[in-house]
Amino acid sequence: MKDNRDVVIVSAVRTPFGRFDGIAREIPSIDLGIAAICGGLGQV
Image (cartoon, rainbow, N blue to C red):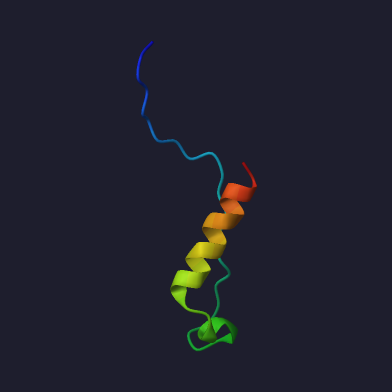
């Protein structure tokens, strides 16, 4: 059997965006990234 280790994208989500100093200013970028990753994995 061939060892296939290709990485593929199977889902996509995005974080909200807005103005600088807008409503999401209190949310750390790490937390936004975590939310996007969890959302993407939840769709698989």
